[in-house]
Image: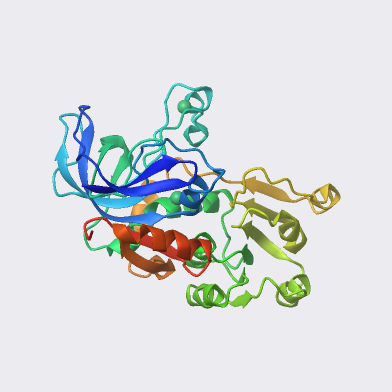
Length: 339
Ligand SMILES: [Zn+2]
Ligand SMILES: [Zn+2]
């Protein structure tokens, strides 16, 4: 079969590889329907890399698939089930795992990063990583389960009360999914802040009341016009905007730090954090959000597929990465069956 293989230090190739086989009793053979390309893939493929990965592995950690065959211990699954994949396989033995913080596992074995993932027609994954999803959910929506679990998990750490005001900094796929989720969960005014016009339009479409140009010199006063005492919750989906977030949040409010830029050190006013009694929440991947997110994706009034801008065959990987690097794409998904 054809697969997108990570070759090390910024290199990848579309290669012919052997079809995978089940080796463990809980292994499940999957036929991949769609696979999302993520900012993490761009980081893995930067030179020097901004995220580790195992050379020789098939990339793709966000995917929806059909079950073809189950091992004897693949409990609760059978052939023809449709599943979304939790790619993070915690070791179960390290200190973090033993304390229940499995998203902090020090030896995480992630499918599509450290083990073979979904950028190929077939994949083998352990049954415990798979979550059933209804056949009726469009593939462009189901494929977003993994990133959406990470956003859902952040939301649970900073839930909106009805009417709470929210500022979401950045309107890439992640920022846009934050807008949609907070809107769905009963937030009041939502302000999206984003330099690209296309993304601001999608943010408005997904429920932002106002979408402001980030380049605007008057960002802080513009948000203040809408939210004079600041927002109840400010989310940095980018990973570089903590200083703006601290300025935009109301006294006693919450700043959610979701985006990450490896190696970046930021300056922030510690005085303001104390004086405003802010709650600063970091949120990294997720632990148990898949069952909640699969239910959410099955609801008709949750049009998260609007964040998908491109659907390409595996041969479109180069085009996908280029469009993402240039910032002209939103979410790009590939269809490994169509190659
Ligand atoms: Zn991802
Ligand atoms: Zn562990």
